[in-house]
Amino acid sequence: MTLPRRSHGQALVELIAVVPFVIVFGLLCCQALMAGSAYVYADNAAHAAALAEQLGRDGRRAARDSLPGWSRGGVRVRSDHGRVDVWLTPRAVLPPLSRFLTVHSRAFYVTANFETAKARPRDVRA
Image (tube, rainbow, N blue to C red; front, side, top):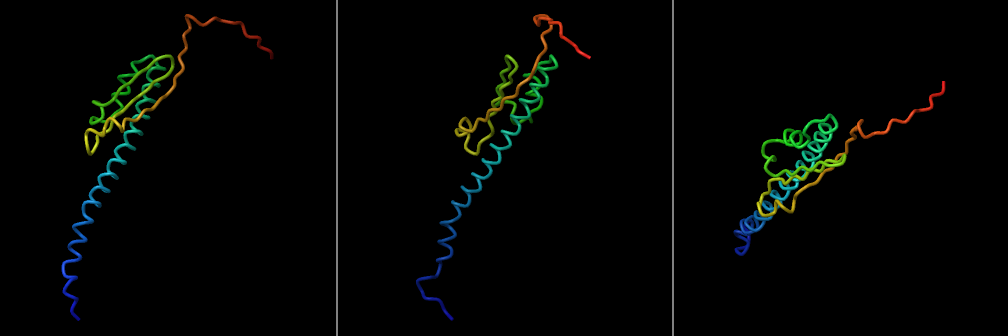
């Protein structure tokens, strides 16, 4: 059975029309994965910084050390008053988009400042 003359090459035209959409969809999926992993890395860095601050160590350094090498250039860490904030900019498929994908994570820590704390006698009952 032979096909009508006008349908020759139709599959090739459809393939050429669909390929750009498949490529864009794949790039968007990769970008979503990179943004998701950046959020996980930022959260881990914030917790590492909070733990370091609670132990009296440098929280900024702990946050930077907990991140993989590709992300150290796009990280900002702020630590003050029992709170650590980490902003991480992931790599982007299109680099101008990276600033719109910055993720933020926050962790809290408790410090014991014994010099300024007022000692109050506790009523202990047996």
